Amino acid sequence: MTKHESAGNPSSGLIVSAHGRHYVVEIASGELLHCYPRGKRGKLACGDQVMIERSGDQQGAIIKVQPRTSLLYRSDRHRQKIIAANVTQVVVVVAAMPAFHEDLLLRCLVACEQQGVKGLIILNKTDLIDETAPTAVQLALYESLGYTVVPLSAKQDVTPILPPLHGQRSVVVGQSGMGKSTIVNALVPDAKARTAEFSTKLDAGKHTTTGARLYHLDPDTSIIDSPGMQTFGLHHLSQPDLVNGFPEFRSFLGRCRFDDCRHTVEPGCAIAEAVEHNEIDERRWNAYRELTTELENKPPEWA
Ligand code: GDP
Ligand code: ZN
Image 1: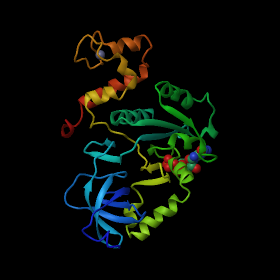
Image 2: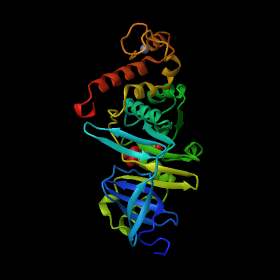
Image 3: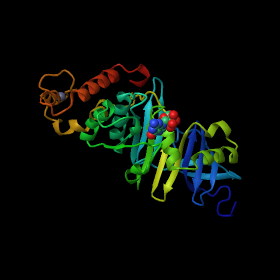
Image 4: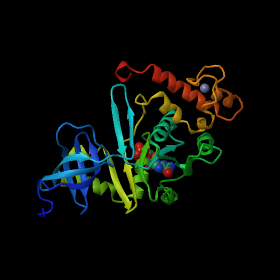
């Protein structure tokens, strides 16, 4: 430890691994420190910019978290689960096999819109399908909404996703089995080795193998690998957040008969009319209405 970094002299760092209350923080020199938050503070996330105080060799205490530009989370019945902080893009990995849940994709994109970050969709395992496959057709809708869809066969070549990743901090999310690990391992060939290094060096064992993990691809580009998920709860959103989650609704807002229109069953609803005129896809409106019902019936602890 140099004099400058000695205990009591805070330095800034980046959380590159998060699991429970255990964090791995990368400091300017590139060194990795095993850190715990000091005191009682809210959950921190991979991608958080923090101030730390070293407490020993390769160890430290997180004393402050810097303001975030974005914070992506999902909720389950009881609580929020932070996925990542300060990302500029969410990459959702889907595949034709096993079948992917469109609902999960839609929810991830709503969360993205709510945080004002870009959404990118990877259609993986294209070696198993062609462009007439139902999955590919299904994704055309998202492309028409402005999301970039990158067809990929991660087993053969991941280079098609390098341009849309460049200059971004992307969190990679997806249902298990879609090929997320294959993609991350191809982008970061030593990902597995680095995970082992985190674990042994910091003696954190099981703590550092299952959480989110940030990797630098180049000085301007990083990706955060997050654990596979099967559900994506949106209980934490408000009704306006939800409306905002559907970018194609925006140009129709403010044109409904009632100022407090919820765009579900109200007469004179501009969104419903747009659906009727095929200006908004009916699948999306149905999904919106289902999510609205879900928000209205959320568990009392979320209300
Ligand atoms: P994860 O659960 O999303 O991390 O998925 P994995 O990366 O573990 O991949 C799940 C399965 O899909 C594995 O058997 C992979 O070998 C396979 N897989 C991943 N990418 C491709 C691909 O591009 N084409 C094919 N055919 N299989 C793939
Ligand atoms: Zn309306």
